[in-house]
Image (tube, rainbow, N blue to C red; front, side):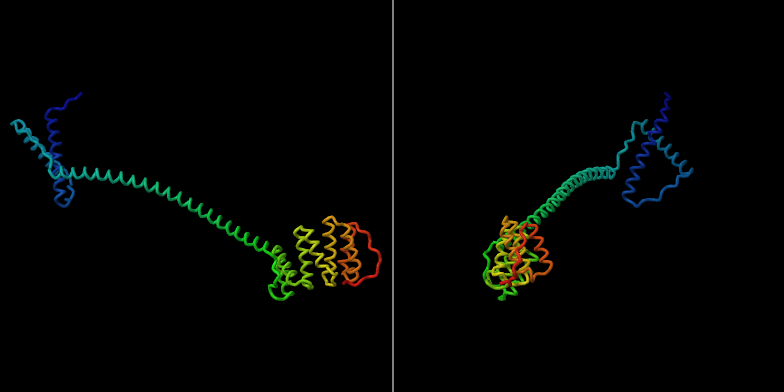
Length: 296
């Protein structure tokens, strides 16, 4: 291994010491004064620096030889500045730790807030659904109470014709309430043509609802006394169908016989055709030829 001369070692040490002194001095000057213009290191300046270094080297060597070693002490301001930098580093580390902890808390709170938002949305949906079901139940309960209440016997309008018109209109849109309205006409205006027509319309509603027994009762009330109203022929055929649907074929054939005696002559061709089809379908015997009778 190549060994350097002792003088070269001393020179390198001196250069290092000088560099430290220059750095410390430069730091002190920078801390106290404004920044200087950068030095342009040309050949002349480098040579001058080399001569200065050699003189310092000789001075240091002489002092060491005389038993007066050179002791380089750090600048007080540099030491204080280093302490401040260390304190700032510790505080910065504490701040970083605090920021990390806060960020973690924020992330956790954000996640919890998202969960709470989703829970609130789901809860709101469930509440709206529950409110909707409750309203539907209340409406259904109110409707059931209305439909199951006793049939009133007083006229809503004070006029039988207007009551019948309103009941027929309601039956076309709401059969259940229309049923009650027609029964109200019958109860408020008994023994009137409007009550008989209401009974006929009531029978039609009962057939649509599959209540053939109820339809028989309603049609029978409508045809009491065999009225000469325009609706009577068709109602007689509907009575026959309802009787046949309730296993009363004999009575159904009797109704068809009454149709032939009382309404066939004045009935429209379409109604007479329906009567013939109904008789064939039920299996009733052809009516005997009898003089036509006026309804009533």
